[in-house]
Amino acid sequence: MFDLATVFEFTRDTVILTVGITAVLASLGVILCSSPIYCALYLISHMICLALLFLLYNAEFLAVVQIIVYAGAVMILFLFIIALLGGRKEVQENSLERSIAFGLIFTLLGELYLSATVGPTKQIEGTINSEMFGTAKAIGLELFSKHIVAFELASAVLLVAAVGVICLAKFSFTPLKRR
Amino acid sequence: MGQEFVLLVSASVFCIGACGFVIRKNPLIMFMSVELMLNSVNFLLITYSSFLNSLDGQIFALFIMTVAAAEVVVGLAIILTIFRTRHEMDVDHIDALKG
Image 1 (cartoon, helix red, strand yellow):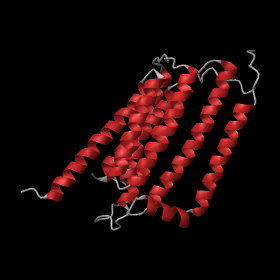
Image 2 (tube, chains in turn yellow, purple):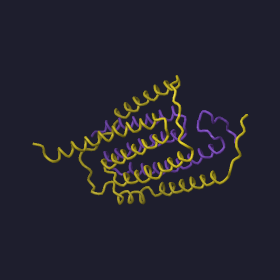
Image 3 (cartoon, helix red, strand yellow):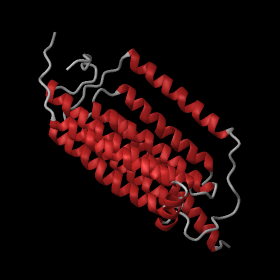
């Protein structure tokens, strides 16, 4: 008969498969929709799928951060800009350049997959040993001990971005004359 | 689920994002495609941090999220500034490097 561990493993694999395929389909929706507002909604669904996958791969803290930072803050920013600029539809025509781009990208996909699968990285056997792998406590301990310099640099990056945006928003530019 | 599926999902999403960046003309959607690429790399880092039983991948993903947030804010401000001076949203028409 089935024991509980097998059933659990099977259910987990099924959920990962479904959510992963949904994430790929949602990302296809982002680049194929004409209207920017639908693109933004597809991107939100893609990010929620990714957050679910993070949860399934023992990254609870990052799943929450993904929902709050990406699906919350960044996408709301995108939606505000779309509302401000007007979500005009984009005419999509099929040209030779576009076919060339598709061909190049699919070649890139094949190369990426091949080069990633033949590499020497092997999954470690056994389960995660620590109870708090991926929790906020573990991330915090790691972040403030081993990666403290990178953390401070990240704060500098955010500060510079904020100052840059204020400069861009504050000084007005004269309209450009067409030649 | 093994690492082949994870690699395939991540590579597909990355390539879809690169494709969107090349074929779309609306700068907002080009930014969304960049977000797709960054997210696929995040996903790979996090799954491999789980496979290899090390927290470094998750820290890397956290920093990538920080940089992505900063990049989106600056990029959207630049798009707004361009829109204020030009009143059109097609990257093919933005070809003069003087303001």
